[in-house]
Image 1 (tube, rainbow, N blue to C red):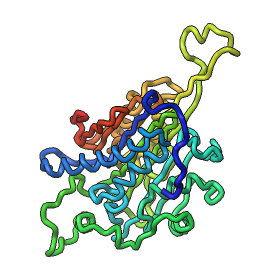
Image 2 (cartoon, rainbow, N blue to C red; image 1 turned 60 degrees about the vertical axis):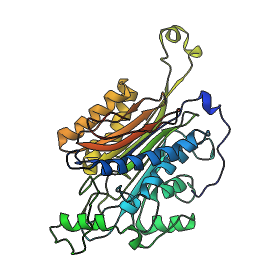
Image 3 (cartoon, rainbow, N blue to C red; image 1 turned 90 degrees about the horizontal axis):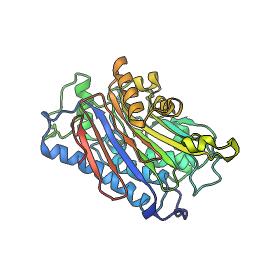
Length: 365
């Protein structure tokens, strides 16, 4: 991370609530078509991400920093469609996307205006960890007053912020290259790797994390290589605020029957917050505004988080889109519905035990 400030003082972590939930992409992976070794590798990748974020949250750190730590772990792992494991577009190039959004400004940076909300970026070809750039740009409103930036300008800003840039060759992996060629109907090369370990062939998914810190702030961060063999310049849901990601806080004064009996001047505001990160067929997430739909149903209809998330994922399926979401509220409730065979996912709470799952009928363990 480019900012080295220490976590702000706050309530003791032992007495406060903090949660981290991660996903590593959703798609058409199957238990029958996989091996125990493959499944173990993906679970290990998700666990490593959860543990990286937990180390920050358990020390009283910011949700923003926890999701950045978690997602950067997956960006550095070639199993996942982000960073080092990003898929190729139709021209054989990698074009990466990322985003971050906070329910309220981080306590460690009180100068950030509450209207800042988040940042999305796309068409990146040289940023090693787009997740770290998303965080850095969110914290630099004077440098980037916009909510969405792309391509060469985004990478120029990355360089000015000290984020690591790499040659395009860094993102090349043999397994993703073979997927690219197979997807175009091209022959495999003679030196094809054996033991092809990727479960989600021709993926459309992303990686993402949503965290709640001890101050009640929720941060959502998502990163992706997009969909395999996408058109050059195609932009998916990952950098689209409201489609592939969302975080929001609001207050009500309906805190129960006793509070409702009190005069209005004595009613205390009750804070609510929700964060969402999606994965799957991004074009449908954009059409359905999936992430903000979840938050809006919780906010305006009073639906439980699980019910709202299930509605949005079913809406995707109804319109022809596959995928799933991870969602978290400031009470610590977690929802991870999906409408496809699998989604790499996991959660870690105050006890520090990472729980993971892959297939749609898996129980977190």
